[in-house]
Image 1 (cartoon, rainbow, N blue to C red):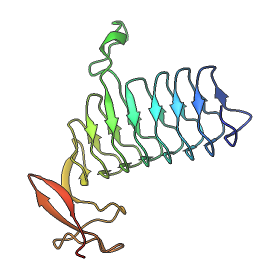
Image 2 (image 1 turned 120 degrees about the vertical axis):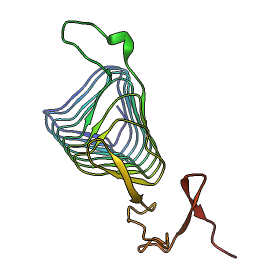
Image 3 (image 1 turned 180 degrees about the horizontal axis):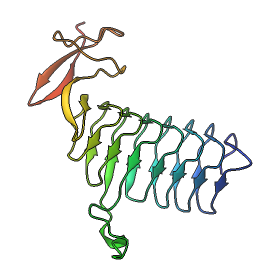
Image 4 (image 1 turned 90 degrees about the vertical axis):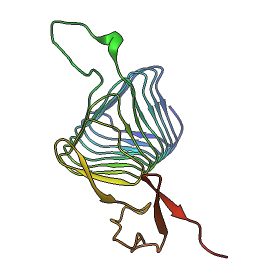
Length: 191
C-alpha cells in the first residue's frame, strides 16, 4: 500500500493489492489480492474490488458496489451507488463458470448512474453516461447518453458531463463537437 493512502479501520486490503497515493477506502470495504487501485481514488462504504481488477487514477466508486474479476475501470470513471457489474453472462448456482468470465472495460471519464447494471462483455466508451437504473447489454459509444432497460441512446454528453443540445456545444466549457462515423468527436478550437 502506498504512503498517503487512507484505509478505514473496518476495511480490508489483501496482501498483493496495490493502493495508490491519495486513495481513500471507507467503511467495510474490501480490496482483494492482485488488484491495483490507482492514485486519488475514493471507494465508498461496502465496496468490494477484485481479485485481479485494475482501477485507474481519480476513480470514484460509491457505496455498495462490487467490481468483479474481468472488469477494468480506466482513469476518471464514476460508479454510482449500488451499480452492478456482472462477470458471467448466463450464471447458474449449480454450474461452475469461472473459466467463462467476460471482460468489461469502462473507458476514461465514463459515468455509471446509481443502480445501473453493466452486463459483462461490453465496453463503455470514454465519457459515456449511463443513466440511473439502466441495463447495459451492448457496447456503449464514447460520449453516448444511454437510459432504460435495455439501455438505449437518447443523446450525447460532453467531457464535462453536460448533455449536449442540437448545436453539440457544451454549455459548461464551450467545447464543440460533431457527429462523425456514428460517433461523437471534439472539434479542435481554431487558432
